[in-house]
Amino acid sequence: GIPVVMPKPESDVFLLAQMWRWSSVIVLKKDEWYKFHISSKDVMHGFSVQPINMNFLVFPNYDYVLDFKPNKTGEYMIVCNEFCGIGHHLMIGKIVVIEDENELANYGY
Image: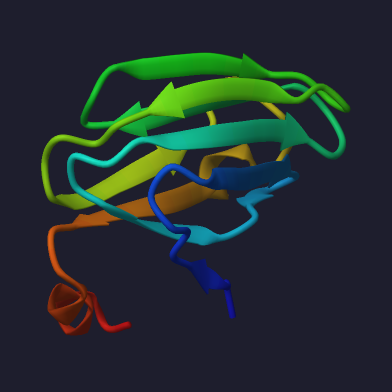
């Protein structure tokens, strides 16, 4: 029930934090630049991409802009690392990085 989006390289990617979910699964191409716009709809959240060490605070009604170029394929989890309420532990999103669109079947898309 979570939307899957595959933005074009060098385009804007919008990711919205909301108790207790991230807005969509993001599919990106390896070695391409993207401009992430990260915001919160309700309370302060933490944007942490694992297993790489990216950590940012996400404030309500603030557009945090981040240039991002994934350099390895695979699945990356987005976790909230700022306690946001009783469902905080369930707040997990996903970024999938691929080299070729044929790889989407490997991830069930």
